Length: 458
Image 1 (tube, one colour):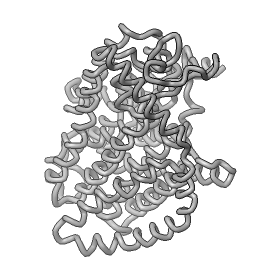
Image 2: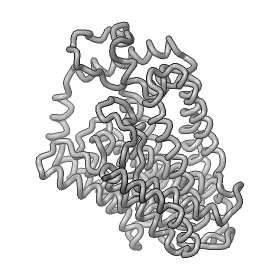
Image 3: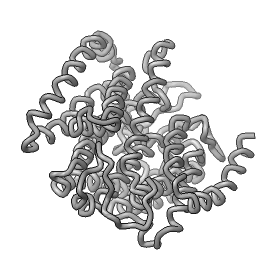
């Protein structure tokens, strides 16, 4: 029955796109619906040709309500501008390069259908990224997109609270795993914190961001993810340091940091016993497994340095009849039904599955957005919007650091949020001059960008 419903929904994409093209004020509500669908991503998704028992980063040819809304939004916005205006700048093309360098891994894949699952997921990310970017660029939807992220974070925190008091030890909210939740929240929290440091509590938008910041931190704490807990002060410290180094705003920043620090001390005191217990009771087997799986990845890279062992094929190649686990010293006597896990770092996973060139392309893609945030601090200096690259810089820093400990950045929900942040960076890059030339900023004020497009629907 679910397949029939999704087929009908897919047939509705062209009419919806045409409706959005005619009734342009509906575009903003579709964007909000997309982030609402992210709150229900798992129940509103379907895997065609699914393999639910497979241990990998994709278990089927996944299509969700969010993807269908993204496609309709992109089609409606594409009808308003030339093809050259649809494509973003460097960051997008770096992603295309990464995607293309992953394709040769099909030649070494043990199962081409399983490899296609991950490739399809990357194509759907193309669509989502372009839809968000064009919404930002054509409809000037910068502020509403950040507000949508804040609302998503707040609702996710409510789900975490419900799970926590329902007896779930490591809550995961809307995400499939607590580590996925922790990585997403530690990426978004610095963005909301940066808005607060810039605007305080002077308006509804900044107050919403403050609430989202506390929700993101609280949700991360309740995951008891060791990596997530370690990343909170690092991610939040970067926009705080940027604000403190800004001339003429040090005293104001200190006044705004003081109550946050006080609440933080009280919060840490409340949860410290459980956090300490989480670190003390961490099983030694977990650390050994990480090392052994990293050695397995090294064996795969040594065998297939250019193409890898096949995108999304780790779950096949790590188990018999392949001997990578045995060569790396993994215990082979675990029973006939045992299936080994995934290496606990996204960098080794990409390198093992897709080869060294694909890893280099991914690092360039990641690094370009990180360096762009640093560059934007100077390009947007003196405007209220300068807080946004500062917050994203903090979020991306901890996201990349935590990815050395977790492979969950290959999970679809985490990638969707990362693509949202990357779309914001691309928008700021392309429009930095116009945004700086505006009479006022975007954060906390009902400012408009200088006219560059025919329609402003936000």
